[in-house]
Length: 205
Ligand code: GRF
Image 1 (cartoon, rainbow, N blue to C red):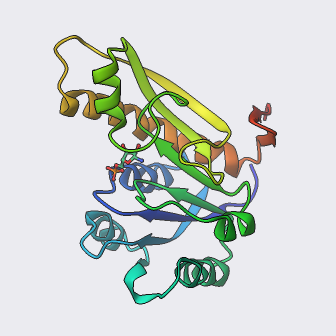
Image 2 (tube, rainbow, N blue to C red):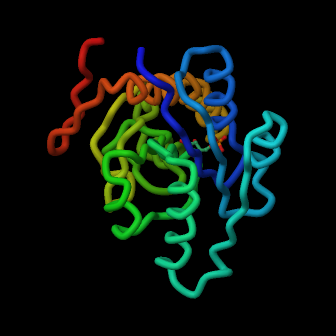
């Protein structure tokens, strides 16, 4: 076990994954210090969750910047100030540009509610239902310049039932997400993830 990593979480909404990360850190299952939570939405409930947990939480309004790079530079400045080792996107509804990604390469994770490369983008659960798959799930991956295309770290399957609604499937997947994301962050904290091309190797402890 090494030193704790400095973690930042970016959100746009409810923040149930953020909550799972906060709880896992508290329980000692994830060796990280959650230094800050950043939202691009003022009313994101995840900001309240962070506040309740005593974690610095910041709303940065993209509309205050006249370019995407200007906004992302502000994000990078915050990350720099806290020596952030890993950024976890948790329902952050914004595509980061190469400018940001190149400066944090291999240090940005995302969680997506499908078994990628199936059903990237918005409404992954609805896409799965409409396609008629019997199994969906969730994926934690490193972020590259595409939409949900980066190297896959962990995946977990979830059954799809014939009478599922989008909401029921989403909540079944969400429960899995709450286990999978902390697990992936802990692997990173233990320095056990090696990216080679498209592949992520998980090294033995
Ligand atoms: C999750 O389903 C995640 O996979 C997707 O956005 C949703 C965020 O949910 N990227 P929450 O805000 O963590 O509850």
